[in-house]
Image 1 (cartoon, rainbow, N blue to C red):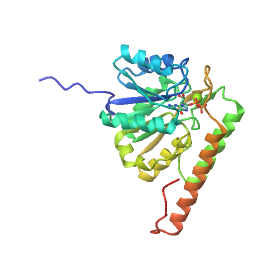
Image 2: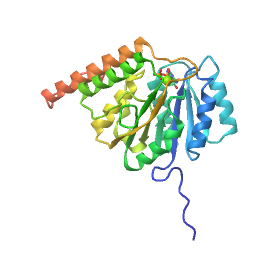
Image 3: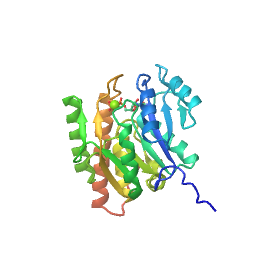
Image 4: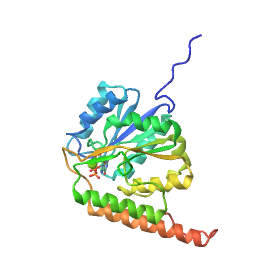
Length: 260
Ligand SMILES: Nc1nc2c(ncn2[C@@H]2O[C@H](COP(=O)(O)OP(=O)(O)O)[C@@H](O)[C@H]2O)c(=O)[nH]1
Ligand SMILES: [Mg+2]
């Protein structure tokens, strides 16, 4: 009798790369092609928020010719966090063993994906880190560098997480970890989603490892980062930090209300 053929990625299983998009028509075809070349066994889901530039139509055309590519058409722009939650739910319904978060603009090199998946063999969550030894950040303006460094420092101090890049968005989550993290409580809309999931992973006690990546500023299209997104992250991190301190000071006392 022949050996069963392993499905998906060795040691990890079936993997879905979720790529959230809003106006990434110039970038998406290249990124999808690079993912397919770097990791031929993974599947890709483009979670598009009805981009006015036709990104969803381009994704649909790619899905029509490649069985490894699918599209989730969402009716309106609701923020990165909500697009990812919809993508994770899509993956769960189809029984994927792990999901990957990856930006559509080329900042997250698909060529780094095999290293992230290799690390996932011995971890529940793998964070592609810009701020560990061996990582590189290319062509980012000083303003963004400072925002990322200060944001990470603040998140680490406020939330007490041993994670060097809690705001980064190039990650692998095993499905079992997502279940343990209880995503029903997630309330972030923008980029604070990454910090929120780092916090939930830390609190759930799952194994988190960081792998150095080469992060490069996008060459085409515009960033969707805005002062509102920064304000949401600042407010949420501060509120989580205060709640954690209150819970530590008064163990057993229930904190009223929904998590911020
Ligand atoms: N579906 C969806 N994707 C989004 C939204 N906002 C940003 N993105 C995507 O999230 C990724 C990161 O966004 P980007 O603008 O590059 O952020 P930056 O790298 O921090 O400047 C890209 O793939 C964007 O297209 C959104 O509201 N909905
Ligand atoms: Mg970007």
